[in-house]
Length: 119
View 1: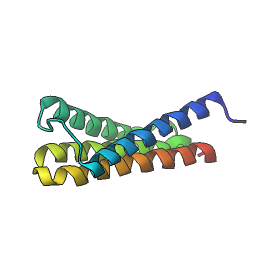
View 2 (view 1 turned 90 degrees about the vertical axis):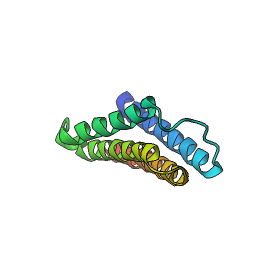
View 3 (view 1 turned 120 degrees about the vertical axis):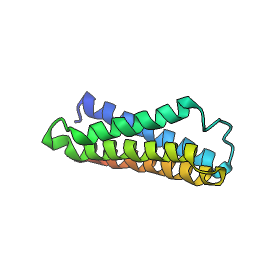
View 4 (view 1 turned 30 degrees about the vertical axis):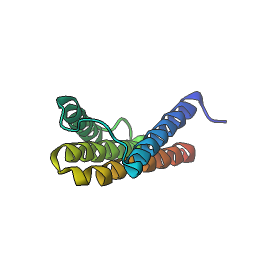
């Protein structure tokens, strides 16, 4: 039987799967109504990038290194996609949001498998 910590970690990854699905759905339908050049959007993208880079830089323990790597790399990539949405022309907004949503879905699936595998 799994511990409560493992179940909570899987639940958190399920939330990332749902968030990625929502972002992917928004990018496919083209119904995004936000100002991508606000300081809040740019700050969130930069914060995600820095948070992911910090997570890649230090790992808690060797057994959780694959999960930490997937978590950190996904934050770095999604942060870059958000900064790309702010910097690039409007025609790139949909594909970049789609890539960010796909990254979050794969992050959730990969880390859930790693938690269940016991890595």
